[in-house]
Image 1 (cartoon, rainbow, N blue to C red):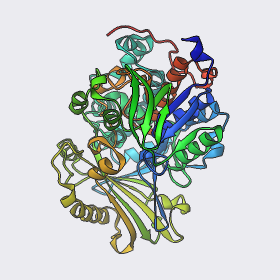
Image 2 (cartoon, one colour):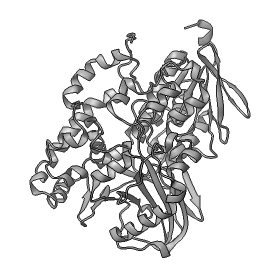
Image 3 (cartoon, one colour):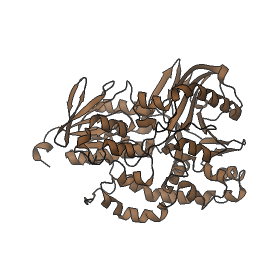
Image 4 (cartoon, rainbow, N blue to C red):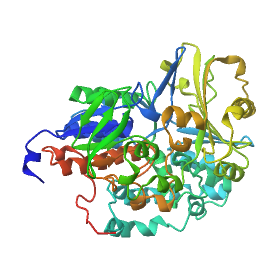
Length: 518
């Protein structure tokens, strides 16, 4: 490190005020950097944003909040208490699964009660619930350090932690195939594998590593932040500003400036922001193509990005309803009778004919989300991304009717007469309004060829001085892993910059990485 670099303040520009960008801003400010966050939208949160309409409040994207431990680490590194900043309710039961035949499973962290729920479907499979959860706890404990460290090169795959994890990893199996070791009934397997949808993948393709997502739910709980999940980025932004971070909304970055291959700043319509390091939290595939010239990218060229596999998209209805629906759970997943056909349709880029539907009725827990006596309903349907040929402008109103009709059959309520305000989102809207590449709301797919070393790296490998956080980089999609990516990216940047208080950032494992040439 150049001595002159270590004796002056270090300027960091963070592109995007999503959860990963805000966490990075907090950590790098705590480490001693001068931090500016440039956000394209008019609010913080990105896909974890909020919609306020006619007195109703809806989360834009994530509604399940899992594993608050990682945010507790981040806030603690900044001298704050996450639990003091964000009011939360732990949900019990965590959510409801409802099958097409009317069978209901209440997902509960109480293993005895969960076993009784599964026994309604298959008494023999129910005997394996406790040992299955125990194995996944052990699996999570082994894999957690791997998800908390960077993967710079092929040498990163040869660490002792990978050798310890491999017997539990079973990379030759999918989530569904791994579950077959425990459960013979396909409905039981689905009850413990639908969580792969959090990654935008099907359990029939998702690597078996991700059975640990179920453990994150059952082992640590599902939470609802008062005011919705967007309360978390709002609290992060509040704390970051109090720490001295400059957050600039409605200021999209047009491009980065470079000296050779090193990023030196960011350009917006408002001016140029010099930077000793840039942290990118925008949607990876769309943002990198916009801000870093193709000629500077050796690995992640425009052609390479276009060739990659991407997650599914979602069709969304945000519905403000007159009346309350106490018989509808806070979270309900209505599972399609033909889940395999569902998956094939999504993989083909289509909108499923008999889709699986997720409904959040958060007003039963949080009355702040709707006017008194009313409800805020969030409806999500996994659909194909824009790699298919679906004409969403034509299909959207027809699909809305299909979803409302299906909901009526599944939950016993025709909610149409109760609708007082409404907003609809299609894959095209995700791309146009949120900058999501191909409308793939969960970023790059999480197949084996796009994980760990093969995913875009937290210290971006194509240019110098650029670091990545968010669902499009290691370790992947989902709020807990996005926060882990922020820890990794921030630690790498702080160490590279020689920040005096780099040690305040929660350590990444292992602290030293071998630089082995590819």
